Amino acid sequence: MNPVDVMNPVDSARAVVDAAVSEFGDSLVVLTSFQREGVVIVDLAMGAGHPVSVMTIDTGRLPEATLEMIGTVERRYGIRVERIVPEPAEVESMVALHGRDLFYQGLAQRSLCCNVRKVRPLAARMAGIGAYFTGVRRGQSDLRAGVEVVDRSGSPVKISPLADWSAADVARYTAEQGLPEHPLYAAGYSSIGCDPCTRAITAGEDERAGRWWWESDADKECGLHFAPDGRVLRTVDVLLQDLLNNARI
Ligand code: SF4
Image 1 (spheres, rainbow, N blue to C red):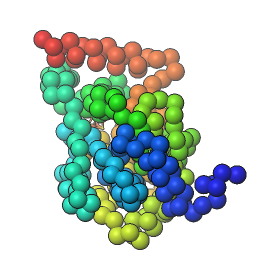
Image 2: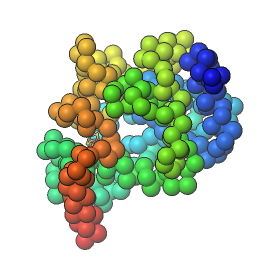
Image 3: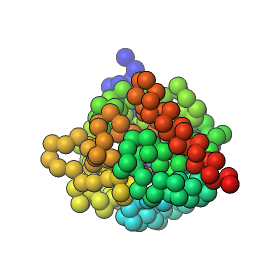
Image 4: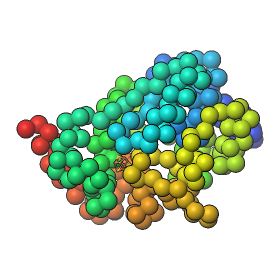
């Protein structure tokens, strides 16, 4: 048995963080949206004795409370969080062609918006990065149940030190360390993303039920998750190509 498997969750996560720092050094970053898990990751990384850059995707549609959280974390750790922002010409083109709230029109339009505001700017920034930490946990949704602690299937390597943690583990660490909490948790949110695409949940709902609540459960991730026949992929590809052509005019 791997010694990490018999450690308590905090020691196990620290071991993952330490190993990642040793392997990737300056090429390792924290990518966070400042939910509870993300703040735990920042705290663990800052405690690893090696400066790790902290980055967030500022889509231009974040809740005001998230922007406040960024400042809170910067002051607590004495760091500057890097804001990864979308290409202005692509956003302008998308809004001109489909409207600012296109995501309510269907999965292809929502995927297009996530592509322009999140996936493309992140992919551009991650070029040359060796690995990044995320706060993803297996218990957050069925889609995340198979998340690897260290996922080397792509580049950069994706490391999820909290993969085995429960929501209670996160809450306990947050309280014990006195970590700041995103203000929207107090308003009933359990997963926090862009303002127009996130709502509070009710008792018994899946942790990520408040994300893109108008869609089916199978679609609730930011990246490219499409039907097996590729139908939505082709639709979003066409939409994306249209807006890129429009952005270049
Ligand atoms: S979460 Fe909503 S607003 Fe944010 S990038 Fe995705 S579709 Fe656009």
